[in-house]
Length: 74
Image 1 (cartoon, rainbow, N blue to C red):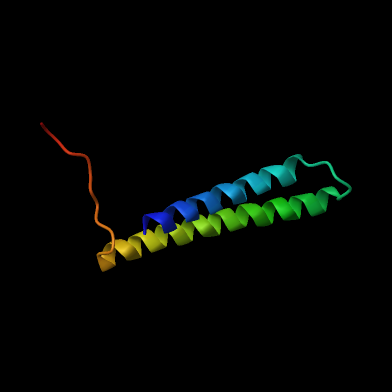
Image 2 (image 1 turned 90 degrees about the vertical axis):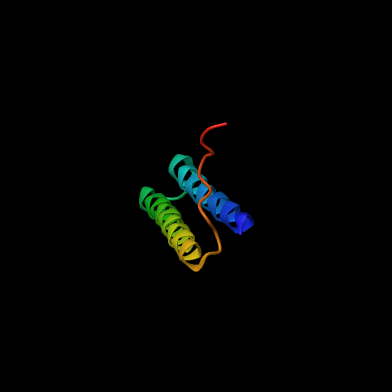
């Protein structure tokens, strides 16, 4: 389960990095094409983040993951 969470977080970071690359790249594309690609990459990042959040909530309700919290006291 933890591996899935880490993979999803890495996918979110890769989508964010992709959007940054589309924003900074000065290739032969027009500005509209760059904007569309960047917007798609950011939309993918948001969709992955929401899907991960919903899956974590679902996993919690099913009992697959349990909140651990921080230990208090000695």
